[in-house]
Amino acid sequence: MKLKFTKMHGAGNDFVVIDAINQQIDFTTAQWKALADRRFGVGADQLLVVEKSTNPSCDFRYRIFNNDGGEVEQCGNGARAFAKFVAEKGLTERRSIAVETMSGIIAPRLEEDGSVTVDMGAPIFDTALVPFDTEGLAGQPEGDDTLWPLVLELAGEKETVLVSVLSMGNPHAVQVVPDVDTAPVELTGPLIEHHAHFPKRVNAGFMQLVNRQHIKLRVFERGAGETLACGTGACAAVVAGIRRGLLDSPVRVDARGGELSIAWAGDGEPVYLTGPAVTVFEGEITV
Ligand SMILES: N[C@@H](CCC[C@H](N)C(=O)O)C(=O)O
Image 1: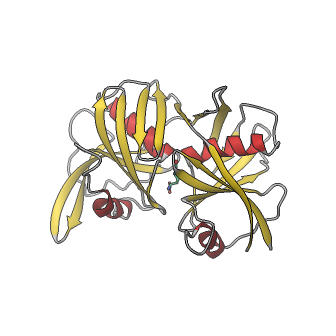
Image 2: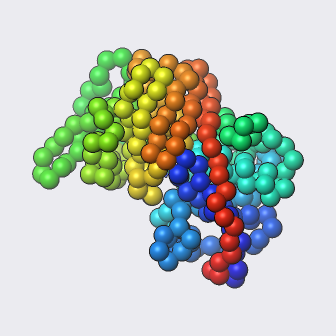
């Protein structure tokens, strides 16, 4: 079967975007994985699928598959690419759309300057919903109920890292590091991703505070490894920093592939993610 696709990126987090409204798609996990493969396929951190929604208050349904073939709940940079894709393909005339995802409705809006702002919904702190199993963990530090001590096993040695645990529709564990360039992202990222206390695995964020409205961030993503940017990771890091009293909204987030901006007014309020969405090329592949 021949499949038409568009290669896009958002601050270097790259995607294969597929119109499943005008094409019939019924892929196995192995086929998703093959398409995302950087040597044998097109190559992408995530595959994004555009579908019709059955929810009358939504314009589209948005499905997300990680590079490892697994379907996941949310993707922030992908949401910006999604909004640009449906506009460029003429699938909608609207500049603001409501999009059904596995973890609720999000609302991307195309800005005049070409960037996209997404209402990502409110962060979730209930550990059962992240999901995060707190049984057997040592006591939490005073002041923030989302901060947890996580014990990692590194070459037989135990090391405790303090992580803020929350969900942006998908699970995140964010820690503050002195310098993102020397942070042990490749070493501890996989250990955090697969930590036994996260039954659905987790995205591991490493943030460096530059000032109260500016951070640097690296994210070791669940199912994709370290990416050049992670939109939900940026939302989670800023929410964690504001809750810990370290940051003030809005916050500029420097990822390795570009700059994002995050605004959040506090508990119960939605997080707004603004950043670029770029079309790289169109293609057709036999799958
Ligand atoms: N790159 C994304 C997040 C994609 C999903 C993530 N790897 C997960 O498994 O939850 C973003 O921009 O948010």
